[in-house]
Length: 204
Image 1 (tube, rainbow, N blue to C red):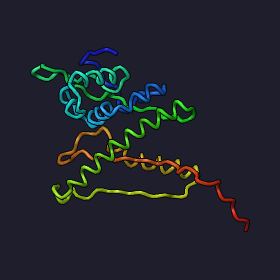
Image 2 (tube, rainbow, N blue to C red; image 1 turned 60 degrees about the horizontal axis):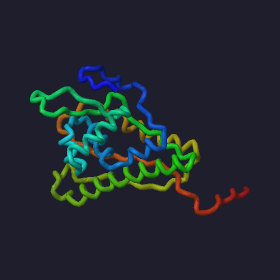
Image 3 (tube, rainbow, N blue to C red; image 1 turned 120 degrees about the horizontal axis):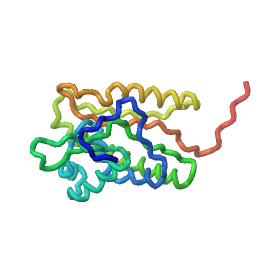
């Protein structure tokens, strides 16, 4: 991948970069890589040193993860800053996703690793906020914690996932509004594992 700083970015509706190989999907589960993706996808342009503050690693170790993510199209160099002392990074113009395929043991294991890392990161953000909510401005104190077990058909299951994604879509990759702050939203729609065989329908 070229490192030119003045190349055109992909349009927002371009096809996403996709990870399909289980080994590469598992590579995304590294907490440092997820933290970098989170920060840059939110519109930040950060240097390796600034990313190191997020990851808890050294700048050189964080630069390794940035180079990995650039190789697979997740991040790219941003325009140099005036002092040109250290290059910043930004999210690539295209969205970034992994095909979380669970059809084989290897891909299911890779998917589980990514899911666990995402859950852990979001849990930490949620707990940190709730523990310090008393210090927040009153209008920002309420966290929305919604949890529901629903009986859904396959069609309803798919529709619920699509509708929840559609609610969030207009807020992605837009110009940051005045007075806004970064808010974590996690959307999980997953069937519960069956504890017993499904009950037979009662005859009328």
